[in-house]
Image 1: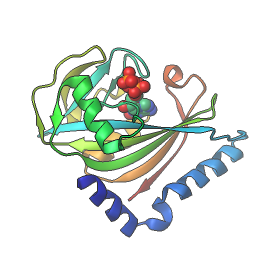
Image 2: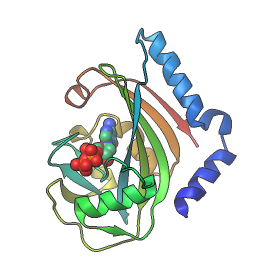
Image 3: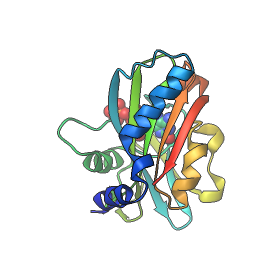
Length: 196
Ligand SMILES: Nc1[nH]c(=O)nc2c1ncn2[C@H]1C[C@H](O)[C@@H](COP(=O)(O)OP(=O)(O)OP(=O)(O)O)O1
């Protein structure tokens, strides 16, 4: 499975820099330096799927919930009893009706917010083979964008840091620390990115 292959490839390359634990440690260090108590109180797993078609990427305008009003890939919380891979496929189907034949794991994004101890861990996959046509749902209004016309101004601020790398085929782990007010202020105050 492409997801597992990705993980194996990662562990063979920059193991010393790329391990998730090392990244958490760096986050703790950086947050302490910034004078934050740095309680990583809870971790919640999410998925994010970027569908590719030639030089285009499918984004959805989020109609409700976290990130409402922003263009984003498709995804949501990983449910109890499912893997991130399974959760990613399910969310893609639920949010825009596409059935991915396979997903390639490409990135893990960690998000912290200066006004909470919560850490979001987002597993990012790319799909280039899928069945069906994207349809609008209660959650998302899908639209294809050429790689050169991605609406970064109307997306999460972090996307500008990592989406170009993802579209270039890179694998990586990254951390983005958001100002209080997270999705409304939409300002990244610290970040780390480790190529795998
Ligand atoms: N800073 C950020 N940058 C980004 O590109 N995507 C982000 C992000 N923070 C969250 N996301 C993505 C991850 C996930 O795909 C989505 C948030 O998930 P949802 O709100 O859809 O989750 P839930 O599962 O709680 O919702 P339901 O689907 O209603 O159950 O936004």
